[in-house]
Length: 125
Image (cartoon, rainbow, N blue to C red; front, top):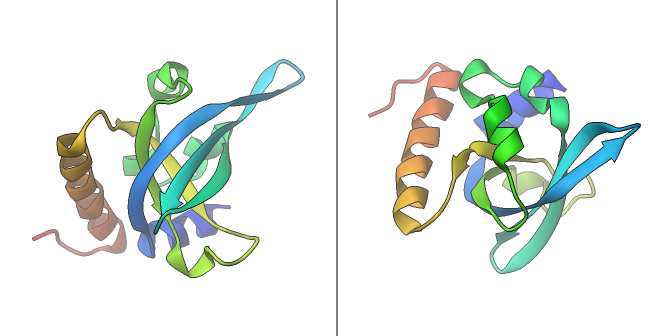
């Protein structure tokens, strides 16, 4: 799973996603569900609740991020454009980046792009 998320981060595009809910198994949080749009088409996805343990440090959501997520809240989503047409779409809802307006999207997109470059070993300009 770690390799998949690293590939996603290194090949990603950014869009806005909407948090939809949390799934439970045996009384424990199992995953969080969200949807996102690319070129007017809606995609549904879910990330395992423990996904943070597989992410590079600078992309991990905090427990507070996960606890404060509510249906309808908007967040940045990373997605792999090369996988959109497949059944194995790859995306990640970044709960650490809530979007309230277009200025949040612009600010957080720039911040995440810089972190992606850092994760690749590049230097942000």
